Length: 116
Image (cartoon, rainbow, N blue to C red):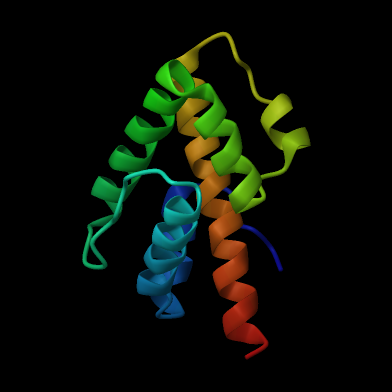
């Protein structure tokens, strides 16, 4: 599996395979497991998804770091990839981590669909 390199590519691939709603459901499931009060509507526009996820990750980094780490653990975002990001600019870090979250969730949905 070749992972998308941009948010737009990820959304395009999810839509082509008709898996966008499953991606949203997977995000909702993992956020619920992490006890983070965020529930995306299945009809959410990709731009709104990106903005809301970025904003949530930013707030978690700033205000609830333990919850942020727990979320990354539950979603199974690679620690190595997170450590490779530039942590000097928290806003940029939050955007990059949000994309890592989406990529990992996409991987789960894609594999589940391919091998069902």
